Amino acid sequence: MTASVIQAVLLSLTVAGLYAAVAAGLTLTVGVTRIINFAHGEFVMLGAFLTYWLYTRYGISPWLGMLASGVALGLFSIVVYRAFLARVLKQDEHNQLLATLGLSILLLNVAIIMWSPDPRVMQAPALLPTLQFAGVTIPGNNIVVALVGLLLFVALLGIKNYTRYGTQMRFASDDPVLAMHTGVNVDRIFELSFVIGGAAAGISGGLVALLLYVQPTVGIDLVIRAFAIIALGGLGNIPGALVGAAILSLVEGLIGTFVPGGGSWGFGVAFLILLLVLLVRPSGIFGRQVHT
Amino acid sequence: MSTSLPARLALYVAIAAPLVLIAFSDRPFLVQVAIGTAISAILALAWDILSRTGQVSLGHAAFFGIGGYGSALLTPILGAPLAWIAGMLLCAVVAVLLGAVTLRLRRLYFTIATLSFSLSIHVVILVTPGLTGGSTGIMPPVIAGGSPTLQLLFITGCLMVAAAVSDVFLGRRFRPAFFMIRNNPDLAAASGVPVTRLKILAFVVSGMIAGLAGACYCGLYGYVIPDDVFTTNWNVLPLAVTILGGMDTTLGPVVGAVVLRLLEEVARHFVGGVGYQVVYGAVIILFIVGMPEGLVGFARHLMRRYRRPETQVKKPELAS
Image (cartoon, rainbow over all chains, first blue to last red; front, side, top):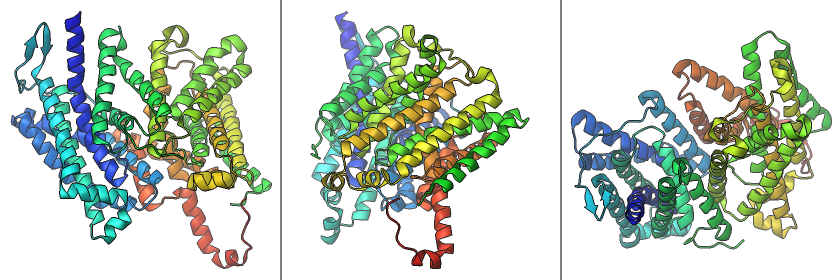
């Protein structure tokens, strides 16, 4: 019994690595540009498909596939930003939200039309050996997901807090007008943060291919969780996203494991928790509270 | 945006007349399409009323489903008309609670909270099979004995009710306050607008009308499963319809529902049953970038340009 509890907790925490990776990329973009990017999930989905194909068609290791997805989605983000998002940046928040939601629906359905909605499994050999101790078994791919997710997370945190670009990002997000007057190229900083977020989505997509079914709707499922996570942690707060991811994946994993037939409703219960948290702290657990 | 009573009545007739004509035509497919379009229009009107106070909901599937399930499950106990009223009252109660919870949330948080609410309600239905039939669904009583003609007439009536309610909230009593709350809540509060009360009022009215749409939908075929009503599709559809047609109007959501349905049928023809929602995405993007005021706003803009000399002479209208 204790072994199965420990196993469930550890497995859930490895999934938290994936959730944190998706949420960290999203919260970086949202925190800097204030654009609520619904299409982030579809970027993750595209990354998952890319990693999957690189492995199944060309035998390229998922390690490389992950990196390639990161680069490809970073480039794709540049296109999306220049062709589309830069135009809606000037409109009100309401329209920005709808615009990225539209992009999300468009990409999702194009994927469904082109590649069919069927789920696929990437049957790659595990990238790391399976961990076994005291009756607990953690598959190697789960360890990869936890490690890479955490690494990605730390990297994004580092970029935001300790680089020159990160300082400019925080400045541009706090006061775009003042930042512009002091010589920060706000538009380029916004683009950069969007592109970094996109690249993070691509790498997260590689993790998805290791852990979950590769299918067009995988992105929307993840982005909804990511929104819950960043709302739990507080908008733009990257460490908060880690705590949010752990809470969400633990609730979901434990209910899925120990409640009979609970596999489908852990998700809903997690959202109930989110609603309750927002009731007490309207800007999330670690978010700056705004009094109105 | 002056809407005198005769102009409004003319609008209602213009909306209802084609639907009634279709109802009595001998084209079963067209009747079904008209039914679906009218239900979308009702749901979109509900969404638009809420959005006028700046509350962008992605959770209207919850009210759609609660209205449908509520009226269906209560019909054996209360009888048909009362059960529908009770179902809508249930939506109103839920809307008050959700509205109170989400009142202080800023925009993104509000949207996420409504989305998570609809997901949670879906789960509540799944885990209470004793009460709600769980994943196997329920068998609501069929509207109008299953006659498509009568069903369409009934739903047209519901659409008229929704349009009339929408116009009440576009009238001089509510319109200025609603838009002030959307554009600057602090200023609204400082000017003595009862922000809290009006936001919750908008939520209640919106929830009840969405519930009405859901009750209509569930009563169409006499069988409904949770995945039919509590899906993201119903969360996104009202938004796409309203953006397409034009926000903050009564005609907009109706026009939007018709045009979106047309686009949907065209897309279905080309890409088949899955993926036709690609038009939702394309429509939202195109309209946000190119025509942010929707079809009705665009038409109005054209008319204004055409009639410019006249409008310049006209006295500025009071908020009506």
